[in-house]
Length: 239
Image (cartoon, rainbow, N blue to C red; front, side, top):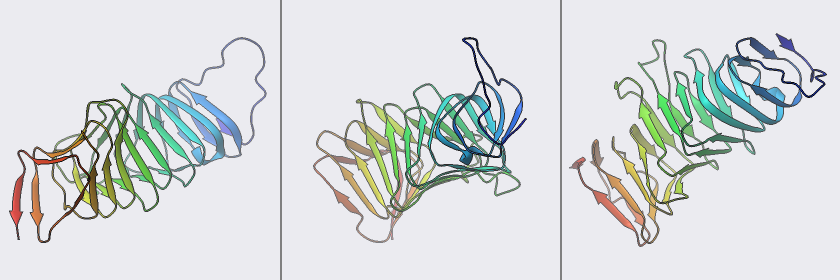
């Protein structure tokens, strides 16, 4: 289905896209799908709600995207959250990334994000939080490597934040940090280590922990705040 304008849907009944491939080719104020494949996400200027969908091609989010069920980004596709846009991954919802997710706006993550990178043959899943962007993990949010190859990385040049209800958010891929890591409440567990670049801040009662991974330290890291920074399982190499 090729869509170049908002279709005229009328009546109290349901109109359901639950398996079709939809190519958005013109601006629409909002869009909702309950399955199938979508391309042209940048044409949605308001709220997009996707449940158990696949994104095809190069997609830019300029409005707000609510993810329900599972969202799949294949190896030949990507998702970029532009400045001013917002991606919401609610609790019990999930994104599977075989291609990159680039954030220039805001990501609010309470659910799971699984990343697969096999060296670009063909999958190159990575997370990139660019300068000026906010990645806000809440509750027991979980970022993990889908198949355990550990080639995926979280590249943070903006702000990676842990907020919301008490609990532990977990990043189970290597954190390459050039920005800020802020833990306002609860805990953030970096189970695959980090280069300890940028700045790390834990507020009162909050915890940043390194329960696994390998960490090479060639300078004194920038740790701030009254909270706890705990190395409780990582291999630390002082260089």
